[in-house]
Length: 180
Picture 1 (cartoon, rainbow, N blue to C red):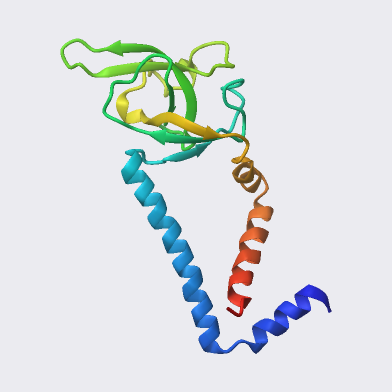
Picture 2 (cartoon, rainbow, N blue to C red):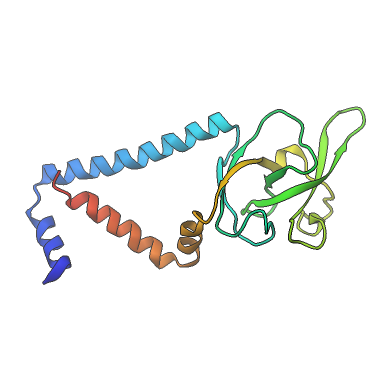
C-alpha cells in the first residue's frame, strides 16, 4: 500500500485523546508563530518586520527572493536609505531607495521621493493618482539587513498555490500522526 496506506492505518489506530493532543500541539505551534511575529512588530516598530523582495527593481543590491529585515525608528528618513512603503489602493508593499527628501516649512514633516535602483525614473508613476511624495505614514520601515534568496519559498508558494496547500496538508498530517 505504501506510505499513504501506512499513514491512513496510523490515523485509524489513534485514540481520540491522542488526536486531541496532536491538534492542541498544532494550535500551540501556530499561536507561538503569531506571538513571535507580534513581538517582532513591537521590537522593530514596523507593521511588517520581514518582507520578501518580489521584483528585480532593486538589483543589483537586492534580488528577487531576498528577505529584508525592517526597522522603523523616529529618526528622520535620509536620502539613500532603502525603505519599504505602501501605496494607497495597493496591498503589496514596495522596496525602493529614497532619492529626495523634502521638509515642509513650518510643520517639519518630511516627504520623500523613491526610486528602484534598476528603474529608469522615480516612483511618481507608482504612487496614487495625484500623489507626488510619500509621507511618513506610507513607510513601513527601513531595511536594516537581508538574507539572500530565502524568500523564494514564499514566492513559489504565492505563484503556485497548490504547492502551499500540499505543504500545509503534509505538515498538518505529520503533526497529527506523530506518536510522540
